[in-house]
Amino acid sequence: MQTTTKDRTAIRKDFPILDQKVHGHQLVYLDNAATTQKPKQVIEALDHYYLRDNSNVHRGIHELSNRSTIAFEGARERAANFLNARSSNEIIFTRGTTESINLVANTWGAKFLKPGDIILLTEMEHHSNIVPWQMIAERTGAKLSYIPVTGDDGQLDASKLDVLLNKSVKLFSFTHISNTLGTVNPATEYCARARKLGITTLVDAAQSIGHRKVDVQEIGCDFLALSGHKMCGPTGIGLLYGRAEVLEQRPPFQGGGDMISTVDFFESKWKEIPHKFEAGTPDISGAIGLRVAMDYLDEIGRDRIQHHDEQLSAYAYDKLAGLKDIRLFGPKKGRAGVVSFLLNEVHAHDVVTFADQRGVALRGGHHCNQPLMKKLGVPSTARASFYFYNTTAEVDRMVEVIAEIQKFFGA
Ligand code: C6P
Image 1 (tube, rainbow, N blue to C red):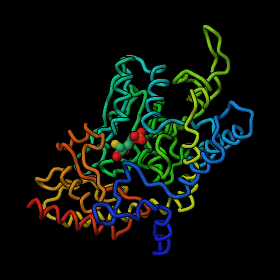
Image 2 (cartoon, rainbow, N blue to C red; image 1 turned 30 degrees about the vertical axis):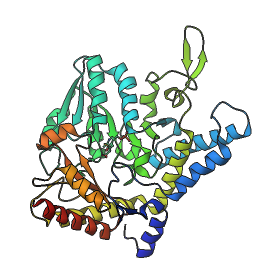
Image 3 (tube, rainbow, N blue to C red; image 1 turned 135 degrees about the vertical axis):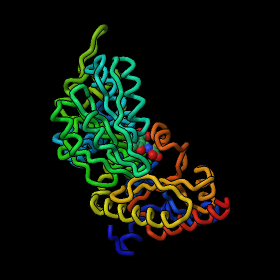
Image 4 (cartoon, helix red, strand yellow; image 1 turned 180 degrees about the horizontal axis):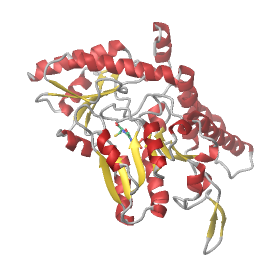
């Protein structure tokens, strides 16, 4: 995003949390892949809801319940519009990406996977897009297969994809953007190839949803999972998009109130989609906050956010590459707003602990990518991840602190 100084100053004013000192230094928040900060508009919407409208949805006939229901279902409509889904019936509220993927595994997977079916994943998947499939594979007799990552450049091996994406595959589930490597996978191309072979697709959009346009019809996926907290929304709310035809064939996820049409002592009937997948009282305020987050991102402009991410990430990559004894991960070009690195002889946790003492918030660890770490032959990486409120001055500050770390550790 080519923000003027005024734009950026105005944007940062919406995020009062950024304006604070940590350990005596100005905070530089570069852990946006873990969770983004929330603008005042989202926080105020939560306040407003609890101060004026709080009530349960779909049940009451009184005014507050009506207001809550209208706001909650309005958030679903807004989400459908944000993703360009054909209908709000294709939007299921969940707790986040992890629950969305588990929902697919336990409904679609439990019903349709058979012994010998292949679930195709990639080596750069987050644990949320591995473990649910391992669990359902154990129950159904399906098998897992992985498209390899080529190496530190963080690309998927295209020649292996040609071989592995074949008719034995029942589901192809892959991340849109890698949370460790910053790789952007060509979701539209992958889904088109899978569709030709009759393969169901799931896109993990946890790292892309707040950072670029995500249009489910253009991508052509069957399912798409996302988390609200990675796109300026509250924690505890997320979405599963599912193509209506695919959702309709599936059994419910959890049983309980709100997902039924009738209940008798020995059998029950379900509501239509999407409600049959939403048992119990949902996260009403979370959905309302998420709606405001979507409005906020669209007001800034998702293309502009993408452009800013790419510029800042390329700037950070080049600056870090200028340091000696540093190993950088992920593609040199065309990366999303994530840069992972390792300093010779310095553990990623030491890098992050030291940076924290200078007010710079990074993340160190395996980032829930243990299989990928194994592939890369490292236990962990340090990671900086950016958002539209970050500045080049903040990247400069991070690089300055990393140079100080190298000096301190004699690395
Ligand atoms: N990654 C990080 O990288 P939840 O926890 O359900 O909101 O999101 C899980 C998830 C799924 N897929 C991808 C690609 C992700 O990056 C994440 C979350 C965070 O710091 C936490 S490990």
